[in-house]
Image (cartoon, rainbow, N blue to C red; front, side, top):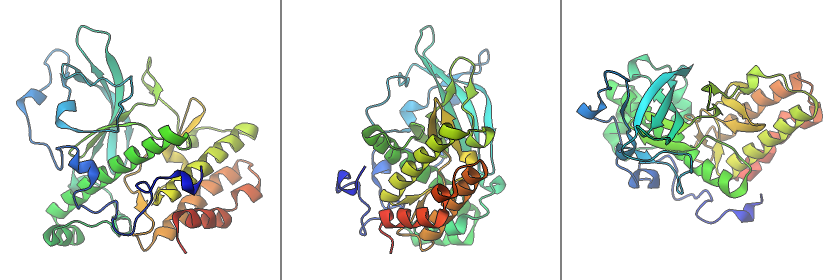
Amino acid sequence: MRDHEFSARERHTRGRRRFDDDEPQFLKRGRARGPVPADPSDEPDPDTGAVWSSWDDALHGPQPHPAWLVTDLAAKDTELGVLKTGKEADVHLVRRAVPDSDSSCLLAAKRYRDPRHRLFHRDAGYLEGRRVRRSREMRAMTGRTAFGRQMIAGQWAAAEFAALARLWEFGERYGTVAVPYPVQLRGTELMLEFLGDPDTGQAAPRLAELRPAGAELRGLWEQLVEALMVLARAGYAHGDLSPYNLLVHAGRLVLIDLPQVVDVVANPQGRDFLARDVRVVSTWFAARGLPADLTEPTALTGRLAREAGLR
């Protein structure tokens, strides 16, 4: 994919920052801006544990919605267990199904922790370049008050949802970057496409769990470089890239865990985030035998910086 293949709308502009809380497009289209009030309909069924689908109350992912996604308001969501625990959020496996029918799908529900228990220990650097309209909210975030921490949690969820939506659309159009489809955003909960075996509920393995070699190793590296180039052209750095937040699903490398996604132009540390992402993954691939001329991090960081328009 070349620069000219991006439309003017898709290019990074100096006049608008993607992470400003200035009525961004991904919030204009939906209703969920913060924590969702408790609703009696959210009480689980005493027999099955299922609750009514939250689709109607949520901000939806890009259209057209995938054919596998259940959007019927008669559907119910059933918790099947925990897929992953992390510093900032836990990921749960959820089955969304219409009772007494064959219509169902598996979803990964990423739920950010309560602000008092969250470990965004490096959030100051990531939040540079992200702004909110109200000075009170900005002061609260800077001072890490209880309200400010809740605001930060909302920014993580909204930033990840927006980045996934944009990258999903790029992937669908150009086939050069793979991310889970962002199903919906509701408060600080993201519902994502489940990547794994739908029959067993076994999630796709992380790259760190695999031992690829030879042509497979080189193929995964080439997929990764292409994905990083797409992110850079969109003005992004992953911000926390490692073999632990890359999945391998059906031979395809998939980027996950993007709450720290960085606007590399608006953030003064943008180039540093690019360099760190490259350094971590280059080291992993080099340790598994990929030639040094392919994994040399300085050259790749320079290419990404140029693609992002950094001097």
